[in-house]
Image (cartoon, rainbow, N blue to C red):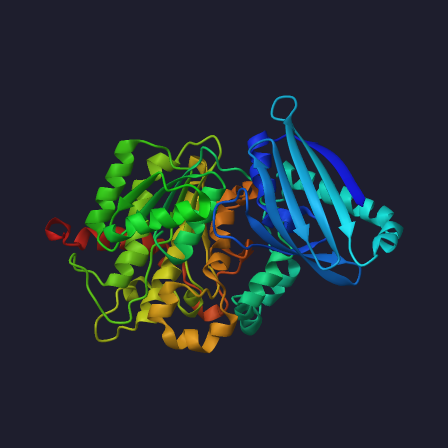
Length: 474
């Protein structure tokens, strides 16, 4: 048997340290040998949870299947790992030292098969070195002191060419991007997040990760029949449920106003507002308030909700965050206020969707500048090409062509979670993000809007809202 033993101390509460380490998927963020890590079981992390790790071993890689065999919250975790060549037992203990300082002791005992003990002993010094390096990586991850986000030179170069930029939208783009990611160990306990469109797709996956991070969630969905199913699914995945579920059809501004008033009356400060609700409507449709459905749901709704909730976002000790979920489709369109509301005669669902998302991206930049003194950061993100229920239902042809390269909903939602959670994500505002990096907002010069159009957007929103038939809507 070969044993590796290391001890570190970090200035983080013991609960935050335990939650981060217990999710063994985080090993790729700090373990010197980990290439990938996946959770194989659906239930909340705890006794019996299984993880699949791929680790470097010299010129090759080794697959290790881990199971949590002992789990005592805030005190200890024991995992047993099995590979073709060895078994390993990891014992991780946590101890509170001085104020907000945690000592983490890590012991890994390796037992080798097929008479490989002699060979393993010859590499013991190297293994000890890797063990120290891994625990130093864990200490850095738990320090949670990452640099402010910035696009890498390679990313900036890709954004200069249409084809290389589009390649970043794929699953391969996501996997390439994550190789350079810094650890994300920020604990969200005590943080209140309002998330719209949470019953499926990107919103549901973001809710799962935010609950895992300790956040308090207010979820906004349209369909009352989905509340119980959604809450049960969240409980199954995380062991927690949303603290509050609000019902609102966000394509109707009367309901947006009613939702805003309920949240304002509760007077619970909002740390993060995520405007995620959306849909692509292939057929022209007007709401009962007299406005085309796409512009109502995708633009007027997040504009009205965010403006109304400004008092609950402003004045926090740490910046509150507004995250607007947009789409790569916006790269095809230019902001022109006069063409945001399409008529039945010229309506195309994908164009209406893209124009609204372009406008929301510009609005993100405007809010960022206007609300800087209010301690609010406002950013947009697009998920790349993700295989969400929305894509499956509204764009079946696109899905057939791109199915092999589409991201999962979890991969598409990652940057939403990072913008909401990561400490460094509040160090920049007014940006568009993909895969945790700020990206260009234009891939073609012809889509760049004029200064006059930018200046006209917010007055246009106010004027359009004023014309709606709110008194008679339901």
